[in-house]
Image 1 (cartoon, rainbow, N blue to C red):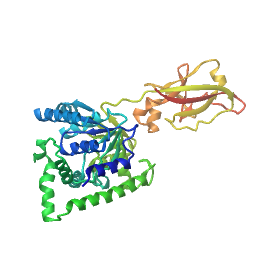
Image 2 (cartoon, helix red, strand yellow):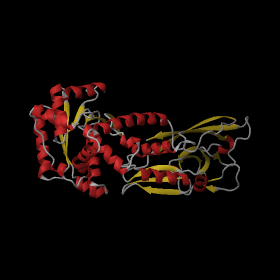
Image 3 (cartoon, rainbow, N blue to C red):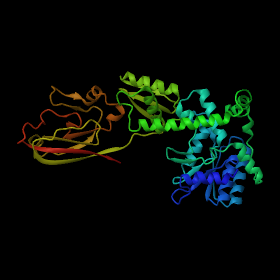
Image 4 (cartoon, rainbow, N blue to C red):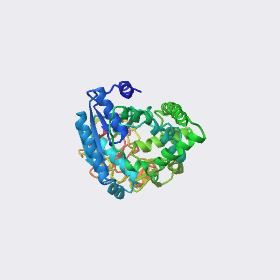
Amino acid sequence: MNLPALIQKKCNAYHLPSPDSPIVVGVSGGADSVALVRAFQTLNIPCTLAHLNHQLRGAESDGDEAFVRKLAEETGFPMVGKTTDVRALAENTGLSIEMAARQARHDFFAEFREAVIALAHHADDQVETFILKLARGAGPEGLSGMPCFQILGNLRIIRPMLEIPRSAILHWLKANRFTWREDSSNADSGFLRNRVRHRILPLLEKELNPHIRDSIRRTTEILRAENEWMEQRIAGSRLSDPGLPLAAKRRLLRNWLFDHGAEEAGFETVEQILHLMEKSAGTLIYELNARQRVVIEYGVPRFEDASSRSPEISWQLTVKAGTGWKKDQSRIGDPVAEASVCARKAGKRKITVRSVQPGDRMTPLGMQGSRKLQDILTDLKIPRAQRKMLPVAVCEGEIIWLPGYRIARGWEVTDFSVQSLHLKIEQKAD
């Protein structure tokens, strides 16, 4: 098997490398990542070696880092190393060790902003992942395995060895007398993946199908194609669209959760959030983990992270003199809204725009007396987190227009010949 040629073919398919997309290889020091680096060396494909010391195995972890530095010297490739106390990260965030390590790697790779991250996953990883996902319960998206090229948040990832069995990778390394590091934790049966690798798969090969690995790989390829077709079918759809089938809702919600940085979105999580959304009353909360949750207000979900902040929003008001009126055709929260008020009522007083504030009241056209904006927005089922970002037009402390709702009583333009002020409010993101 010509390992470098197979890797070259995959890189060519995605037009890599290119001046705009340098390659950064995630290198642990193990056989798979070393094979990927050595293949790039053979192909004269420039890359940067990225090694994260997780500090989980003491001197062994430090030995891995030293090995990768030596590998960088031998190949002539630059190397970037980083050390993260993953155990402390897990304790501080409430994540498992595995999830904390994954988060640390994600954050590390995100530092290479313009690069494509090359990872050394291979065909056996696909098979093991399939069995793990099947045991936990997964749909077509989970069972379709890892894609060769993936955009994950702000990361671009390529896995050029994904169709190559690990036995072929080891054979190539030995044939070329390349050395690598053995991770002692790979033999630890306390890790579920290791039990799948060393016990379950050999048992399936012996008792069920000697070619079970090939069968599973074909299944993942079929599921991946069908999953891509389903993604195309729901493109442009929203969770709020009426008449969506349950399968589409599940998929849209999973995508929405992962787009917002959710660490996991299993079946039970998706089902319970969908159930809360169907209640469409008040404020309901689903805790994803110690630092992430979904807040559902009037059936509309909002993702919250302990480190997230509400966006800063400002508004610009344009006032033009004229006659008649422009009907407010906006909806509450729209970035642009227009309406008209009586010029005589305003006189020479200045009209300004500001965000909604606690205790605000107005006298809506068509109603008697004043009402709290909080009560108006509650009746309109506007989520609480959105309310403080809404604009109001004000004249000397009096709210004269809530865009998307109505103007205040006494500020209406009663005839097309009446002198008026045409107001336009536009959102500006800071």
